[in-house]
Image (cartoon, rainbow, N blue to C red; front, side, top):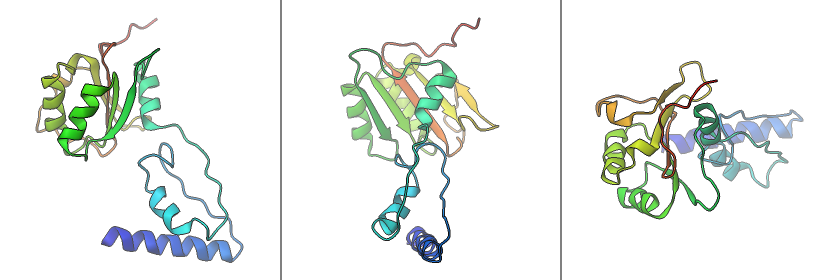
Amino acid sequence: DEKEQVWDSVAEEMASDVAAGRQVGFVTLGDAMLFSTWVFLLERLQGRVPMEVIPGVTSFACIASRAVFPLAMEQQTMAVVSCTAPEPELEQALQQHDCIVMMKVYGRFSQVKALLARHHLLPNALLMSEASLPNEQCFRQLHEIGDDVVLPYFSTILVNKQWLAAAPQTV
């Protein structure tokens, strides 16, 4: 697999640089330990080089704050799922949890939107693309987004069954 070869090569280069006495870093968006390319490098480097992983702000925490949309409250349960998972797994998360973070929505938006509609959750869902980046976009009316819209890679949906996604009041 091409990705595996790239990760092998990058890991070898990093290990070689560390062996030569250089300090090495890997910068990633969000948190390095959640749906991050870093984990594939970690698999190859762990035990070979000393390392420190600095926690980042997860994309969904960033989205919740920027959209003023609570992730979970009081006794609510929360699930974080990748939309690359089979639809029955997504459906199970929607049925079993009060708050659902749906990551990696790009490429499957129409199916995910239909799933949210079947569960009557469109009013409780918002989508943000490219959170904290210059092209950030927040959509609070998912039913208005066409099924043919191509979403950026960094697109995530937040669902909170006890909170409407309508725009927050401004001060």
